[in-house]
Amino acid sequence: MKKGYPFLPLVDSMFGECLQKAWVNSNLPISKLETLITSLSTSPEGFTFTSNATKEILLSQAPAELRTLIQDKDSEAIASLLLELTKGTYENQSSDGLDIAFELMEWLLTGFENEINFTEILKAFLGDSPEITDSLITTLRKEYDLALRS
Image (tube, rainbow, N blue to C red):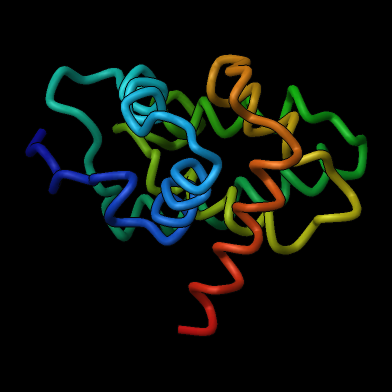
């Protein structure tokens, strides 16, 4: 199978860019964030963009499953599903999918603020990193709002 185009999570995604800005604004070392994200990769070459056909299939399946988990307020299961997408082990997936997971995290961050605890989700997604706090998520939301306005 042909290798996809490289995906740089903190550059090629609005969620990644906003996460990086929130991280830096929270006076956290960027190297730590890079390490946390790199540790999610299953390939020594790093992440790649998901093909459009696969992305369409996954983005039609995953939100329905996520809505059920949101309704159940199951943060661990939401993080687990996002990790499956990231590592390429979700149904109908043949390669990594951090780009899809980041798209869905953006959707969760902006669309379900009162229904889910996004801090718990991102914390579980990034291996229970103590740097993920409510304050960081508040800053992340502010960065996202600023990005939408510019």
